[in-house]
Length: 424
Ligand code: AMP
Ligand code: MG
Image 1 (cartoon, rainbow, N blue to C red):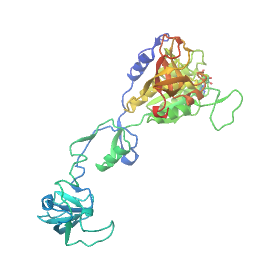
Image 2: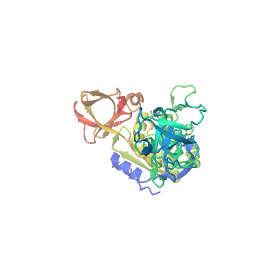
Image 3: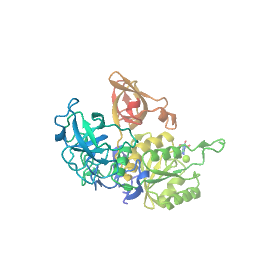
Image 4: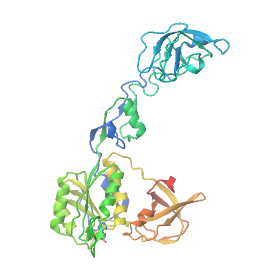
């Protein structure tokens, strides 16, 4: 991987930073997994039907396979009488054709015999049977109506034709896709490997949830939040134990992270200017990392580069900054690794109140409501970058562009949706 040498003083736009980051990632190789555990995975190869589905023309009703020409004049008052020459339960294949004025009893899904070009449903005949009973095959059947050729027959290949590309590479396997793969007999599928991501929290103040909180300490929320973010976009997160702010602890934790050979390492905290610089000196020692000043609020600064060849993000420590930075920079990178489309939904919303921005591109946590035709955005209370509940309440991140410091009520801005608009 080539990481261009970063200039400490350089101020990058969000888009430039994202482009530089994305240029360092490509989709992971594929792996074969059992179909039963493939839900949500991304197909790594085109799925081409090797058989017709259905394999044979088959009946869509319980009834009798017939020749439509024999029933041309059939009616309630003038039934057509046909000789029943064969029984075709599901799972069997008819050995002989039917001839003129003959019929074969047939069950839904069973293959239609040669010679037959339609199926008459049992309800339109004088025959009777109920599912599961062993009604003997009648010697003849009276049919009370006419049919067109092809009626109640599902042609071979109606659903999928041999040779046809059914699911292109890149398709996400949902329930319907899983059914299609099973219908094609694929017990194992080739999918893009899941990005494996090691997550590191650094800071003397951090305590693992579940342990008592002593004075001066806070619980580590970032690594759980990042774990959830990774999992929600198809990655496999692995949290390291919290690394206190000593060089030895940080070196040991980062070395242990590297030893797992993950696809990505993410740490939070310890990279801000003026922060105790243990993290900065250790990541300098272990790899090549740029400390970017990105023109964004919240979220400055951002460390990006590699540690022993493994891509690395150093996110800010403040939980909201870490989360917003994740959305802007880590999310697209992990999606690219996993060969998933970046489907960030953006809508226009009208801001309800006047507010100030600071000239950086700013991401405000907003609650959205539908008012008449427009969607209105209101700040979710405090915008402090340490107040995680502002993210809980947020429907989206409203983007005030760089260079803009005064925002008037009624102005429209882009909002990156954090939840489905149908819930708003
Ligand atoms: P730092 O970048 O180390 O100066 O951290 C900035 C702020 O984020 C400080 O108030 C930290 O206590 C807080 N912080 C850092 N890491 C975490 C974490 N894992 N969970 C919650 N807050 C954190
Ligand atoms: Mg710290």
